[in-house]
Image 1 (tube, rainbow, N blue to C red):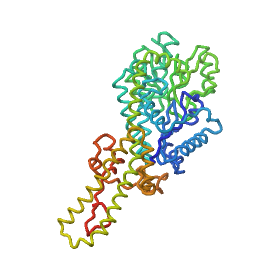
Image 2 (spheres, rainbow, N blue to C red):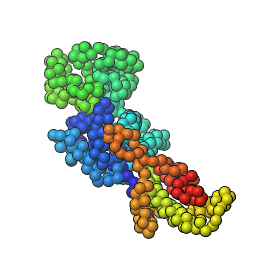
Image 3 (cartoon, one colour):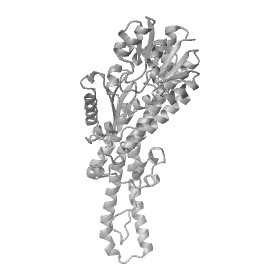
Image 4 (cartoon, one colour):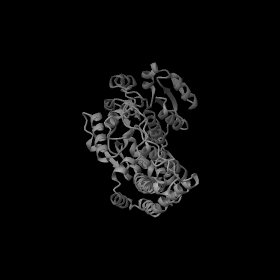
Amino acid sequence: MSDELVVVGLSHHTAPVSLRERLSVPPDATEEQLRCVLDTRVLREGMLVSTCNRVEFYGAGPDAEAGLARLRKYLHERGHPEPVQGHLYERRGEDAVRHVFRVAASLDSMVVGEPQILGQVKHAYELAQDVGSIGTLLDRCLTRAFAVAKRVRSETEIAAGTVSVSSIACDLATKIFGDLSGRRTLLLGAGEMGEAAARALAGRGVHLVVINRSPEKAVRLARESNGEARGYEHLASELVSADVVISSTSAKNYVLTHDLMKDVVKARRQRPLFLIDIAVPRDVEPRVGELPSVFLYDVDDLSQVADQNLAHRQQEVEAAAAIVELEVAAFERWRRTLDLTPTIVALRGHFTNVMKEELARTLPRLGELGPTEQKSLDKMCQAMVNKLLHQPLTQLKEGVEGGNGAALLEATRRLFDLDELAHEAAPTPEVKPTAATSAAPEAEPSPEIPSESMGMPDGEAMTERPAAALGGLALGLSPTNLSGEPK
């Protein structure tokens, strides 16, 4: 049988930010973590998605239960000593496909409809491709997920209104003050999240100050947002002056520590300071929220504002979910053809071998045959195999597409004793050699065969590379070629 897709992870739905930041994986560590998981060979494909709101591993392998167990173990080890068991979710098969599609389409995001997640999933996919851990199943699943996300955004209004964590943070600041006009707002970090926050703040009349460790990025973002850039050495003085601070750096350690902020609070003389930390790992040490006149919010605190925003787009969410379900069904129809391929190849091989054996016994009694006779005999044998298999193969394909394929495939394998041949013909994901996969044998390419030789109509499933082996192999049974090798 073909490999099965599995997903194990946690997100803002199941785990607090303190645990998510503990398990988060920076891009420069992704290759190491992928190899760590795949070195056990339980999974033949793998991909890691790590964002501010989720840490998830997508995998594919022949034993789904073993794959899920390996991913659970990996996340437990990464979360130690903090327990993760009660925060994990697991998906397999069709449910895993549905989850991946929903994540890419931003239906599972804290801010439903936000565009950042699609870019993050694409980046994770590209990193896994570089490692060589993307094979047939994940490649198809992720490329379809990207198409689903595009379709959802073009066919629904799910992205209307405020649709990013950064813009929700700005909404929260507006709720606090009512009017942000003239408020000195410090934006700490000029990355993707910082840029989104700057765009959201630009039209609200704030006095925007941008600080970033890379001054060039700060200057560019400040210029684009009608703000001013300040050097990192001015951080403490800007914290004293600010009314609102929105922090979104990619630092691995706290940027606004308790010791730093204690001095800042003293210099502010009890003026209230609102800190909105949208980074994961967090930029602001949690103890800062205990200081007098400091009001600290993190990404989990933004969920209430996001929920209010979502209520206005619920109808669009339902329309997007319906699109996802249609696409999941289409993916499953394709995936079931992967179960069909090795049985069809083995069945055709069985009939071919029978024809070869009978022909080998008959040829010596026919005398010397000329080229024309040899060619005619070869074509006749091919036609016989094709005609004999036309109806059985058509019924197998229709059974697989209709959901009754498992029973038909099992019956076919038992009737013709195909298990060994089917196992040898099973497709293997074409994963590039890496430290995790270098010892695994590479799959041989499937023969390109016209689908009409099977008596099957052309269709999407029949144009996929793994299903190309379903057609008729040329027998090649002339007197000078009795080996049965394809021509």
